[in-house]
Length: 146
Image (cartoon, rainbow, N blue to C red; front, side, top):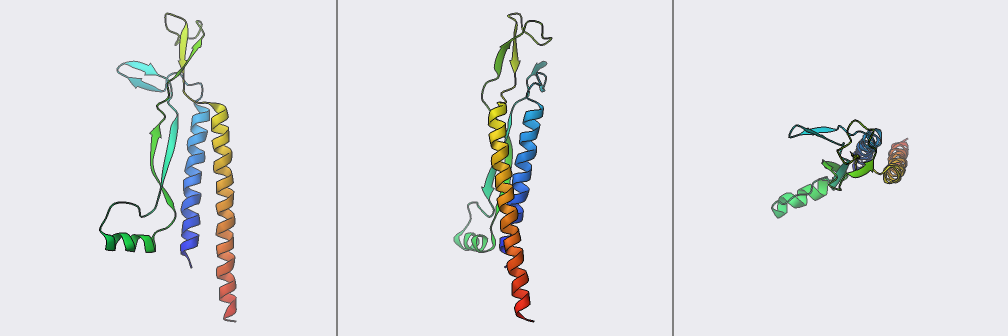
């Protein structure tokens, strides 16, 4: 009975981390000095959250069966850097501009981030609803004994 609550809780945690990561991406959309690589500052690189189902992994069949019977929900496997190239913007007055006048800007697309944020918010809301339904069913089951 509590597995559905655990599934919703793991999804809520995952969606919250996604929203935090997206917020970080939006906040750093204009950060031209994000990381020092070989003595040279590179722009902030967009972060992405990778999610996987709980209990997944190669194992013997009996362990796999046990994992599947007890598993549920999702977890964040890792946060990775987006490998898309940086955006060159012509601004010769910028302190980080090269000799050609171009500044490398982060590979963060605000429109894409906002769409991802809305998607994560909707998923979060849906999981709150699922959690509340599971909680109400458990309460109703307890009332049967009265």
